[in-house]
Image 1 (tube, helix red, strand yellow):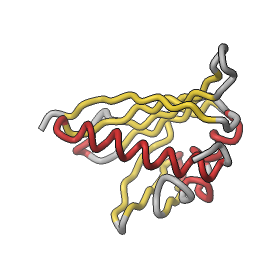
Image 2 (image 1 turned 60 degrees about the horizontal axis):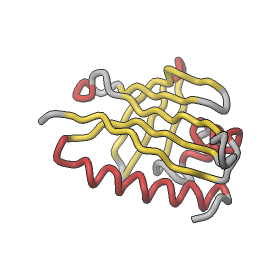
Image 3 (image 1 turned 135 degrees about the vertical axis):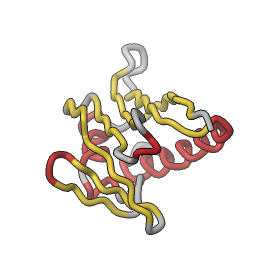
Length: 129
């Protein structure tokens, strides 16, 4: 099945510095993103969801601006998960842009999953929910 790249934006009231911590530290990642995470040598993150583990390498790490994980699974060759953080010059709100990949027939479900995840992130960062 064809895989599709998706990009979705969210507005948050959390600072870039706070969001950055929620994308890079295991203790914060488990509060909104995954069930467990183990940071291994060479920037490898072992994420766990419902007992299943997926490995990703941290390939971009720009403090308070960008975090990018490239998936190491052979089935996901060239796929990544990216978080970009910026500030709206008009409203002053923090803009979070997420780039992810999913099966072509699961685009709507993937958007809904991210909506749910970001609601939890907002709750955990104190930026609404």
